Length: 146
Ligand code: SF4
Image 1 (cartoon, rainbow, N blue to C red):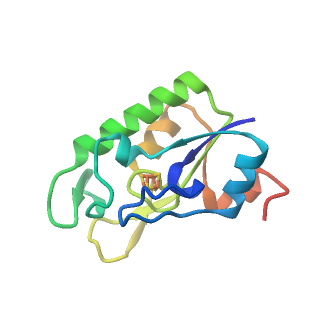
Image 2 (image 1 turned 60 degrees about the vertical axis):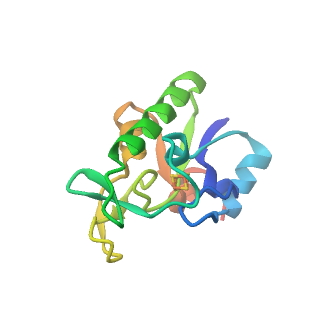
């Protein structure tokens, strides 16, 4: 099976704070399947570390008020291009991210509050018909994972 994953879940230090979200289930996928890693925020040209961002009224803004919508959408478009080329059977993305969140994302107030809805990259991949799953739901899709 070919699987695309958020790079931070694979242990890459591409998170806004320079860290990662390494996930044991994703490491198991890497051991057993062909895995492609993507970080849409880095692919959109943003540095690491970077100021955290949220989607505010449909536009991605950094916590200090800079408009980074263009970078987020460029990163999403590049992920879509890779997905169209590689045709992954499944795409596993990090929870609650303004790029990768599948079910929920932060609400744009930088207060920690969440709302229902996907991040920019997840939205684009779902809209284009890819099977996208939040990493927290991975074991429901692939029995055998914890
Ligand atoms: S954009 Fe996605 S892959 Fe990159 S650090 Fe954020 S959650 Fe991880």
